[in-house]
Image (cartoon, rainbow, N blue to C red):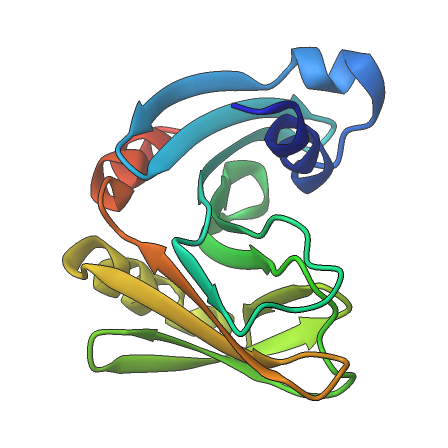
Length: 165
């Protein structure tokens, strides 16, 4: 895991500084996905993550994007999808995630997006485990419709790795 990815992971699980970075433990790398666990104040957090295989069109000021599936057992959260897009979304503009023929609406805030209807988390997670690619379309703050595509190779194994969290 790169230093930037580790920093993103630490921020995802709510930690700050070196102590939090030390609490992130690798559970394994699975083709295009990796799985991690971390301890935080509210309990253990486990997450699977991947980087996009393509971003189109390229956005000025783009930084690395990450897609996460997160389990927070102490909060009763499983398979929460979160995107850190690598660019700012247009304010009050939804995004859309598609896996095969399944499509789900996301809400956006700054450079992040989450599933609009959390009750669809399990359906989306099942689509991810069964699919080959995942695409997220969202409008940047510059008005560009941006598509980020993610490989789902290894997503099932990474999901299993965080399932025991």
